[in-house]
Length: 189
Image 1 (cartoon, rainbow, N blue to C red):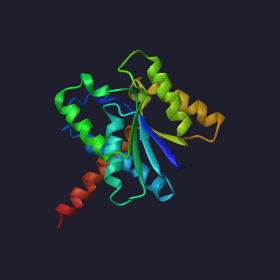
Image 2: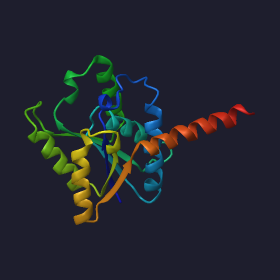
Image 3: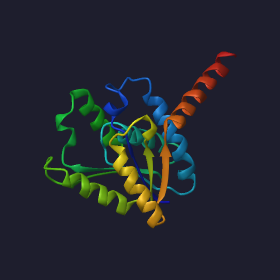
């Protein structure tokens, strides 16, 4: 697999309303745990839609991994131009920081938000340009926006050789448990 789409929950769907939320590092750790083996098997690009939440945390993770894996590249392909226009100043600043770290940025539509067709066009492009998806979604926790991406990814997985990888709440809990065990281990010395 050369090109991987990563997406999932928006921050508000997880009850995360600021960048200091203590759950974000564990989500990023869960993403990293799935990414590293893929990179070691030849993954070249991490591609996200760049929405506030999993998409940007995945970008942050990929940018950090570039120190260890300089061949890895990261891209954001948004549905429309300037998606951050309506965001708070701290979210805009965070977004600009992420944009400085990516290797490629584009908007499918050069216009500002016009309608849902822009999201459909973006998703069509993202699925066409990637070999698989890493989806952070746990429908047992309730339906949310990733539901439709999951349906499309599973259909493409069944019809083509499209890889489907999911991170659910158990994977994030494993990241929390590992971090706690490391902390306990180091505190013992």
